[in-house]
Length: 403
Image (cartoon, rainbow, N blue to C red; front, top):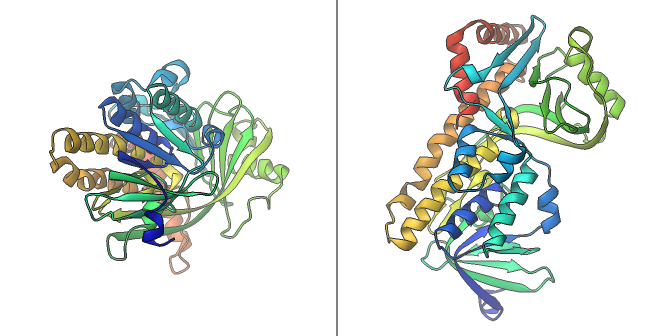
């Protein structure tokens, strides 16, 4: 539609229009509403979809503190499980790190992301918050002005427009927030790590009381508990592998081989209920703002899942932005908004560096020009240092849990 045609469609308004009802968008919405800021959340999916969308489940200590600070932690207090042990299995043996006693003494809390999203949504709606499900954001217009707007397609297909003072894009790397940025507005830093995982969700109890990282000549395998009945697994596979290419039997046999089940105990098998191919990539946009449009969560930067940082960065960024928007709208103090990008990028790049380190620790070289034997010996040396050096273990713990 043309600008003149959009001017004739139904319009509504809010001080802050939030695009996306994931952890970033819903934390931001709850914090703004608590501070009396008029906001609305636009989500293209149905309510049932976001309540059941399986995602990461390891919450960093800072994320738990943010939720506690704002009274959004009831579900975590009732159902969250503290976790602090990871186990590494390699050709040189296995070792465990209880990072509760390392670094800053912080732990993770295991709480499935779809449950957190459901809780955040319930808090927001019960306090009178507005959420428009089935509403697809089409474009952010006039973001370089003091009166941006978001054009949308309603659930019934009708076009509409939301006017705002600020727009927060919490809609991921492929969302309308990024797509609405004009050429040259931001710089994009991108890295393809050359590694592909087959991500699996199995109806099976955890097979060990730790996050398991297995390094094997066939490739990496990972074990991450989600609940007493559900376990997340990862298998490194060839680039171009299709999600349904491997049978359940092949998956479990390969997991058992790479995790050395014959040496350390069998895996509890079950039906594989979800599978997806993940190419490990990272990217960061700078700055995280264009005029009145702010990027949050995966819209701001994509991080590989190797160190469970994505959702935790999203919550941190949402809190920073909520405070800045409140200062701007209630006290006319624009300085925190001016510093939003700088403050977030400091944490984002730290997380990216650790994620990159983890990828190199767990995977062989993907560069054909590098000596595979040389790189393998370096990797074994890194793993031995992590096993034996308390200094190295403290560094690992601080960065593994920290944001």
